[in-house]
Image (cartoon, rainbow, N blue to C red; front, side, top):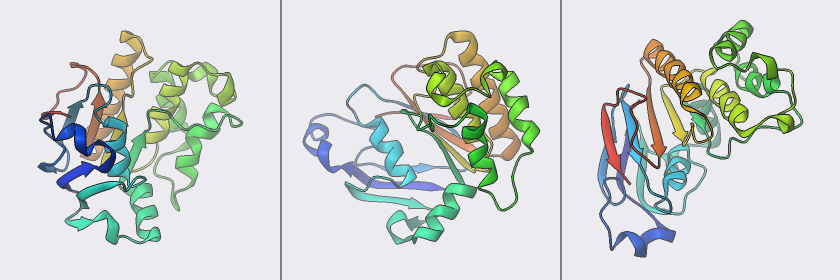
Length: 216
C-alpha cells in the first residue's frame, strides 16, 4: 500500500507555514510500502493533525491524501472501515483506551473485530510479556499509569493486521529500557508483515533503522 500527499496543507496552519519550510506540508510526498518513516515535528507544527489526516479522521486541509493512488475523499464508509481493520493501524497520542475495560479487553477489541482474528489470544500474553505489562492485563484502564497505557495501546495496534502503522509520539512516557522493548516489538512485527510505519516525535532518536527522515 502506497500513501501519497499532494500539496497537503492544514487550513488552520496555512499562515504559519507560508513563513517556514517543511518537508511534508505543501509538498509532493510518497510513503513507499514497507518503509520505516520518521517525521520530526516540533510542538505546534501539526504532527497529530498529520496523523489524523493519514487515518482520515480530520479533513480540514487543502491538497490531497491518496491511498493506493485514490483520494481518501472517494472511499465510502465501508471501504474506510475495511482499510482500518486490515491495512492501517494506529497509536494515537491520546491513546483512546476505554477506561471501563481491562487492559486485556482494550487490546482484544482489535482482535475480535476481525471476521477471522489475525492473532491468537495467546499473542496478547506474548506481547505483554515482552513489554513488561503482564501483571496489569486484568486491571481496568482507569487504574493504569500513562506509560502502561502507552504499552497497551501499542499492543492493541499490533494485534490487528496492517500494511501501515501510524504512531504519534508512542514512547513519550516510557523510560529508555521500555522504549527499547517497545521499539523492538514494533520492528519485529512490521518486518514479519513487510509493513511500514510512520512515526512522529519531537526529537531525533535511534530506536529504529529508519529508511527516511522528514522535518515537519
